[in-house]
Amino acid sequence: RSKGFGFVEMPEQSEAQSAIAALNGQAFSGRTITVNEARPHPDGRRGRDRGGRGDRRGRGRY
Image (tube, rainbow, N blue to C red; front, side, top):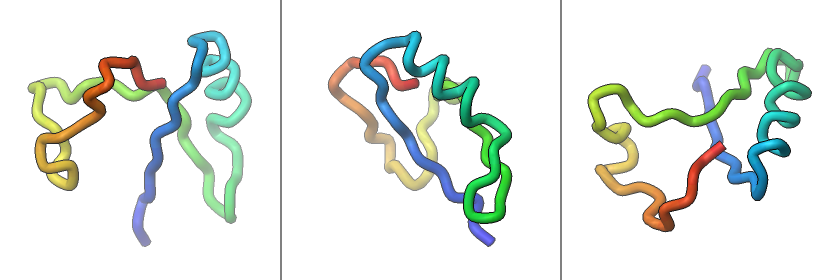
């Protein structure tokens, strides 16, 4: 089964932290989900599915 993933942008850091606290570890469609803040890849590379592109708007991702 695919791991699946998604990204959500929140207007405020406090809202992002509230969502993480409320949803991390919860069951969704019979699976336990992990919710956390997106972090850059340690060596600066992007994931292979993105082809080196990303969010060019310059806003943080939560």
